[in-house]
Length: 358
Image (tube, rainbow, N blue to C red; front, side, top):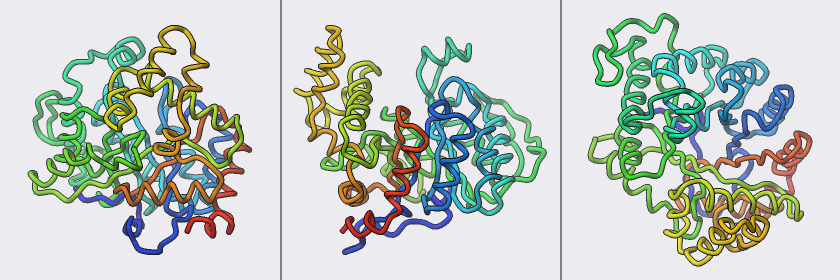
């Protein structure tokens, strides 16, 4: 598997003197954060101003592939992708078919399929799925989709999905137009990413600490005789410095730390924010949610988000790229309106944004 992150790969992250621009970032938008009409509007603006790829999340609600197909016919240049869809709500064949169907409408543009296991409670209570052997299911799903896009047919056999080598039944775009990403933090998931996927899609990467966890990905790829997977890192944030935007981002970070399981708590502790994490969690668990959000320091925001006016934003993009991230992915906050999101993209595309990024 050797698909690129985008149809036109980015320049080297550490190219001396190179100033990032809007072409060096992708965006991720919540599938239920905006109306369908607003999602189309955001996609068309992102297409026009030069964003690399627009990713769409899939929370409970809208089907990501259906929306992406609409975005594909309403845009001309931009890459599209999922960030992420889970591997329990659809079989590998269904995921491959949905992906190929969207790509059919995209011409020679690039598609990035972001996959993950999601969590046990959501998979059982929303999808009614048996959340057993999630990493094994993820690994076999990636292998099956890769096989389908290389051959046009399903593989023969399989442990969790005993397929019979049948054709997919529709034209399959070239494999090089597809990148398969895996999102996850556990050691086993990182190993699967390195062995089978084209890229890793982490969230909350520390610009100061770099990609420590990526070593497991890269080592697994090397052992499997594969190229180094790309890293597309999702970062919450936005363009601006008003208190409302900062408050939104702090609120999201506090929730990840205190209310989204232990994996992210350990991640921030690994970055050296143990005392801060402990305080956020203590305040949150005692019901002092506003205080917990305010306990998120400006230093932590500066280290893990893309936030500020264009000058600061692009400086943080450069820091992420210097840390080893191939594609910084701005997660546009769901508390924003569509006009606010569009204004942010316009500001990033302006000459002032590019000039201030040195």
